[in-house]
Image (cartoon, rainbow, N blue to C red):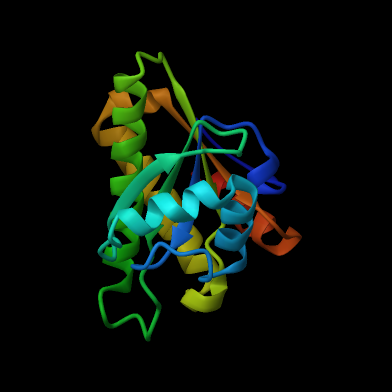
Length: 176
């Protein structure tokens, strides 16, 4: 199941939330990451320093620390240049790798299902066109769940900070 809603990602009670970060996995990348790191507390920053970064298109997991979520998956999001540098492929890989980690988390913790919350990808500093980033995200999750039916136990929500993003995700999900 894939849904969208407006809200503050860090205040919602999901099993896993996703941090759209860069290769450094630091809190200074964008407003969503800053909120996640601030609410999680200094332990997350310390833990991420020990992860030694993350390649673009890949993801790494930490505990949720002081967040209501059990875990945070930090995905290293590509920067959009002009659409001619495989940005879409790297972004899709972020969703594939994050969904795989969520499924493994569910299996490892003997859960029947897991609910993961992705933020709408911040257009700054990544510069992805909003509609394209949304389409890539929804396409990736749909394809993963279609090709690997067991991953349907991973319930996905896209959490939007603003009305414009919410309407873009709502429209994209309704078109399916």
